Image (cartoon, rainbow, N blue to C red; front, side, top):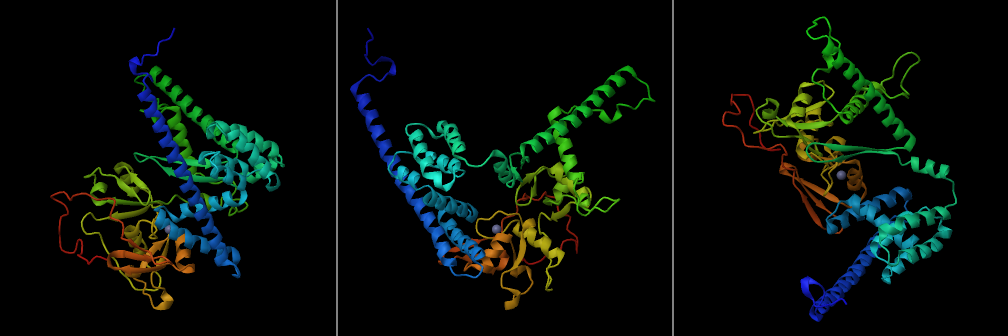
Amino acid sequence: MHSNDGRGGGMGSDGDVDALAQLVADAEGVSDAARVVQIREVRVLAAAGVLAESQSAGASERVKAREMALRGIAAELAGVFVATDRTLQRRIDEARDLVDNFPVTTAAWEDGRIVRGHVRVIQEIGCIVPADDREDFERAAIERCEGETPNRVRGSLQMLAERMHPRCFTERHEEAAAGRCVQVRTGADGMSDLIATLPTVIADGIVDRLTRQTREIINARAKADAADAEGLGDSTHDGGSSFIGDARTIDQVRADVFSDLLLAGSPALDPTATGDGDGTLGAIRAHVQVAVSALTLMGQDEGPADLAGRSPIDATTARQLAGDATSWDRLLTHPVTGSVLECDTYRPTAAMVRLLRARDRHCRFPGCRQPAIRCELDHTIAASDGGATHVRNLANLCKRHHDVKHHTRWRVRQLPGGRLIWTSPTGRVYREDAPPPLVAFAAAPAWPPQREGDMPAVPPF
Ligand SMILES: [Zn+2]
């Protein structure tokens, strides 16, 4: 007979059981409290969406007015939640979708029958179910969710939604294919993931072609190696010379071929092509913004360079870019003074554009990280109000936040040093200091060789 004497750390004594029961009761209390707060948050966010709608009611360009109202409100709430306004806008949309289109699910969540993870899965999968069948879907889905973890119930809900789906796969695929896109996710150690979301046949086709081309390269390398081994000392034989020292793996070759094709190849369908010549699309070259210190360029410093607004890149790559073709936009920053150029013409000069990209690095709206290279130069005080085209009156804003500044009640002032003071429609104030240089280090003792006129001393802009 099994004896329960509590030895070996088992759940033996009554005291242990009581302590655990207390812990479980506490956990239940926390979980209930969290649910109440989460639901309150969803309701607040949904209300923000409704408010944006009511603010834009009656406007002539209704869609645009609603979008601008929503952006303004999202930016205001972003300050409270300490997130970006884009994130807030997405959460507002999600909250409205949940409250408006999944009322049964929201109620089940409020009653504690399901948890937030379930709600997310139901909302995500249920969006393909037509509105008329939505309630049936919700009820069935909630039943399956109860007592099961969100991840384990996902497959079953997908089947349920598929069955209620009125349209064939082809139609849906066409719709899904409209969401094709390419994204970059910055990773660690100067690496990034390039993610292309494509129809499966295209994606498979790309990998297949890459793999075939890669095999050709690897086979040719093997042949050349074999020929080299046979023709030892034969100076007339040069078959393997291009492969000397090439020990790349198949994955590495595939990645290299992929990069070569995309950076140097021409698109197959080129609307600018004439009858017998290539068009201009193939001549468009990649453009990236790199801030690299003079010391790094000279090989005296191995500190990383700054791929503006994104991530550090290694010194060797930065040096190659700087020494390479003109298709790379070179931006050199002096480690000590930096060089300043001011000009008061109507249009910012190319030098001012570069200077402001170096100063701002990214969009200067609170919280935004859009690289300056994809931003527009905004006159802090509009030119029409007498604002000068001057680095002290210019700042990089991405398209989105340029619109927010012009079409909502967000206001901005610029102080010396490129400091921006933003005031939201409700009067919350955000200080946006010019970002500190990312390429920063102590100057080497012998650097820079100071000579008259080399590096003019200039006031901070
Ligand atoms: Zn922005």
